[in-house]
Image 1 (tube, rainbow, N blue to C red):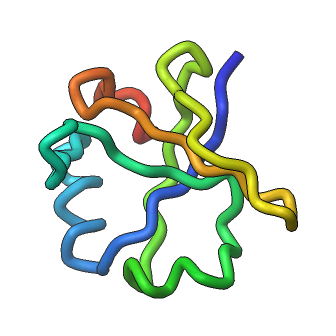
Image 2 (cartoon, rainbow, N blue to C red):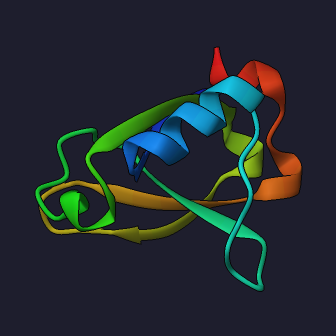
Length: 86
């Protein structure tokens, strides 16, 4: 089963991600955070642009579920493939 998830970032980073079809983690863990909702009211703290991905559930780890139903997932950058950005 695939999950459609969203990563919020700034427009320049989003353009680079989509052009290269890869993401680089800026955390020592190598993890990248995603949400199941594009309309996260707190998400604008992370940027004004969404990158949408379709990921196999097997590579996604549920990080937290918020009271309003939003779920945050982490995915290791090494597990992302170019076709996840189609």
